Length: 358
Image 1 (cartoon, one colour):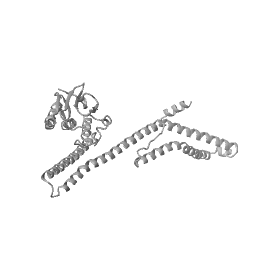
Image 2 (spheres, rainbow, N blue to C red; image 1 turned 135 degrees about the vertical axis):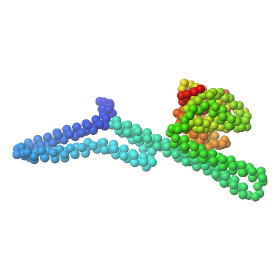
Image 3 (cartoon, rainbow, N blue to C red; image 1 turned 45 degrees about the vertical axis):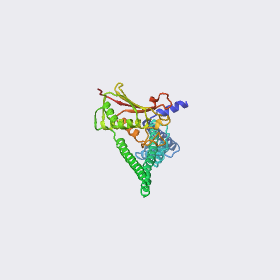
Image 4 (spheres, rainbow, N blue to C red; image 1 turned 90 degrees about the vertical axis):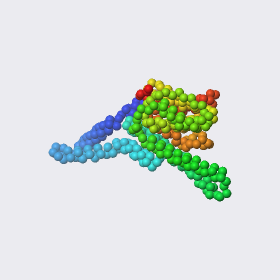
């Protein structure tokens, strides 16, 4: 019986509950009014003249119904008003910044759905707040570090007793840190621009194979400097998208591969064409990425290299993921640092929808 009662409460919708409440109030009002008038007539409080009168009796009945109905309505609506008050209190706490607030209204079903949506909203807002705090903290750190470095070496350069070699070394550091600062500002602005973009307005047919070949030519000097082997398995496959944004994806991934591949290592770029899709794989040898770091590799300012020995500010892969998502695709990172085969260390796999291919 208890389970049946729970099932019935779960199935009664808000409109049905209102209808039942109105019917209950009306029924109880009529019954109580009838009983009171019967008792009043039985004990002689209402004589035959009043009962047979034209307007006095209906007025008495009307007033009695209003008083009794209002009293019953007040008691009957307390539970519903209590649920609404709980919701109002929860929204106040949420508006005040308490994202741990949760609602647990069970019935009617509309209130249960309201609770579930409210709790989901509170959870999402809490996640956004954490991301915002992390973004501010990380940005402040990444922004402050080169400024402090530039300031320190600029003060040293004021000394007259520096040799020419020391002065040139310190100037190179100032130039390098200035470039890092400019890169950080550009990446933040680019990421902000991409995040606010919901649709692609400059779509055109892009030859992805040719784009990647051009990126290889642009970064050829870096590849030769580290004596890297480059294995390309590219085709002239095309897809509809933003030529400029897609070019950023290939440049970022290739530059990352060069950066984290040791000297005389190997970078492999290959293309596949599953049904209606275009898949690009950027794979490089090296020490790989720690399994605990892989889920966070696309977070803003996150760098798996905690020593920060490699140049970068942790925004490149975030930008790549945003651009791929904007094109309706996915990107995943696979890394097996303990694997015996070195050419399988780290791979980034991009899958994009391709309506038309050559």
